[in-house]
Amino acid sequence: MSTLYDKLGGAAAVDLAVEKFYEKVLADERVRDFFAHTNMQQQKQHQKDFMIYAFGGAQHWNGRTMRDAHKELVAEMGLTDIHFNAIAEDLVATLVEMEVPQNLIDEVVQIVGSTTHRNDVLNR
Image 1 (cartoon, helix red, strand yellow):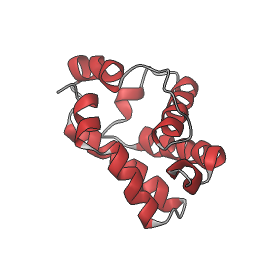
Image 2 (cartoon, rainbow, N blue to C red; image 1 turned 180 degrees about the horizontal axis):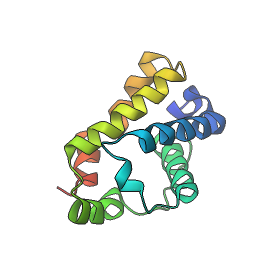
Image 3 (cartoon, one colour; image 1 turned 60 degrees about the vertical axis):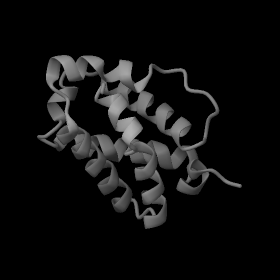
Image 4 (tube, rainbow, N blue to C red; image 1 turned 180 degrees about the vertical axis):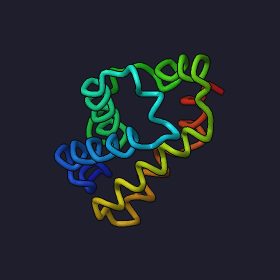
């Protein structure tokens, strides 16, 4: 059985999606300030690695937990559901632009938009 990662197109698709996604994020006034002092090359690679893992393309995740990675953004910059939703909207818009079938977009949303994932990112 193939993974969501395979169905989406593997590494090339993830690379393209992350590039397009961050174009949208950095243009999105709702969330762009969260990335003002971020090394975007490093951030993009981190996001690619995470997506590969989350979508079944890798067995292990070597990065920080979602809770640890976003703790300072919650405490110091006020990261909330509004921002989480904006990022999710930017991701869906990216996938639509890439002409990803709706059933695969739904799978992506189920993974990254789950209550558990949201609560970890927002440190609840």
